[in-house]
Length: 396
Image (spheres, rainbow, N blue to C red):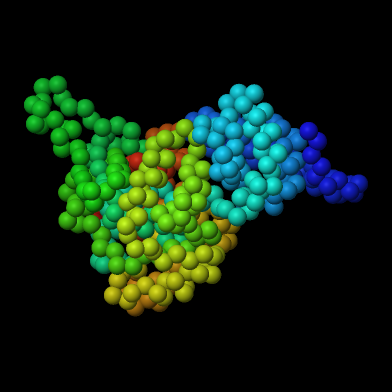
């Protein structure tokens, strides 16, 4: 197959096209190696094969705008959304890749239309397990405003059920170990019997587990949940999966092949929020829309502006502009408010990252949970662990 990317004979145009193709191939190679490896064997293989396919890279770089539209997550999800070959588990092996490639090229106009209409932004409802202890300690009631939301699933922390596995051996937030019971301990005294602290809605279809070094007394119980009286979000492409089957289908397509746990978590979260009133969702740029939306929060509530793994796509200068805007809004609000950030340490570099005693390969994926630009905890990337930082007792 030969794909014409519009060679007009102009040397400069050809050079730009070649550079675009090379850059896109490198982007897919990096995605395969740094993001998909160890998380999705199918996406790791598929993105690696695309990076070695010059003609397909020509098609992608020549017909998609540079930037977000070319990101691998978006392209791969669009093919899954349209029921391309091997949509469920992803193409594995050369023959399967050949079928995937042929289908994608043949249906490229449809695939491109989906890419241009959709965003790769997803909500991770499991982040609520790491946000909940902090939200429960703020002055109640709360007005939650999430920037960078997708479907508003993190705006409903009070509709989920939580199981905190407490007092595990402290491994710096990775949440990988729980102490085993001593052989001589009586069954009723076994650590496992004391390790679980439950919170949230007992009837919720979504149960979120989180490992933490905190004790049960330090965590919100069912009688100490945050009381939320207003919910709103800003997103580039806000979705309503509880009411729109097509929006749910898109979110499901964004779940990487083989990640059955995350797919089940998404479905359960949607079922949990289905009966709830819809949050106020605003489409647009988060900096432009934030002041007007924040002004709608009821004055008797504590305004909490928060975001989880949402700012990495902004240029550094825009992140600084966002931080200045949030500070100004909260200072100018009668009674103030709070800023809860939940990002990789590289995203907001002025928030001091804690020193690591013993570096571990998984440390690179940990997020920093901060209250008003003060780091209070390290968390697993999918809410699986919560490790309070020294000196933050009484804050979170």
